[in-house]
Length: 292
Image (cartoon, rainbow, N blue to C red):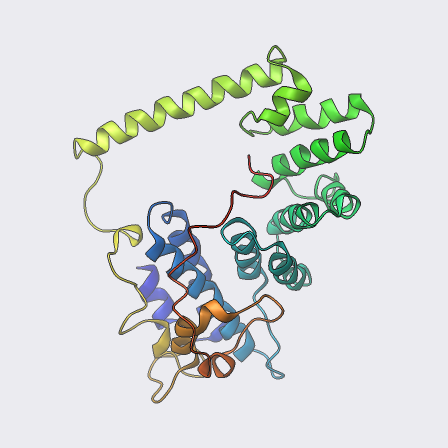
């Protein structure tokens, strides 16, 4: 359904938003499927191609998709420089609630590059009272506590930030145990919450094995790329289908791996690249920077 909506969107703006939702759905189902992750990256790049088409000067970008590409650059590729470039572009756009996520992942990138003071500025912005609350808020408090501890800041404030991270739903981490100890009430609650999650997941897995809740196909169950033969490549200049000749979105799929974060590639830029498909995602990258 999402693929059809994306393919049949009649304006560039609608096409960009449809591809973003499609990319998020694919990303959510990509934990054990590199094909879905590659297709998600392509969908996010397609968002930016449509945004580029939607501006007279051809300089438009799609901020929310840039946040996702920045996160992938940091977590999958362990490339904080590339992540910062993408997230910096995103920060100039209207991100809604994703503004916190953008700040947090920018801070993580800076931290991994040794800029702890710069990371603190971004994290304090993310937890400011005027900032919206999101899942990334807990990550902001956690990393802020880690950095403050490393810099020898006030111990009480370090503990408060770490407790806030756990109380906002973050699973207990070795850093949290070191700061708070195993008898801290926030640690105990977090441990119990994690155990309950594991129990629920085990029950869900058992039900799936019995065929109780799995029926029909979904976006996450496709064996091949959903962007083959038809899809976003059928769009014309205003977002409607029926474009003849070479299509820049089709070229995005072939050249996605070449983007370095300094700019979002357009179809014309990718046309000359001879890189391998982005769906061959690097699964040999190092562990996540400051992972949970």
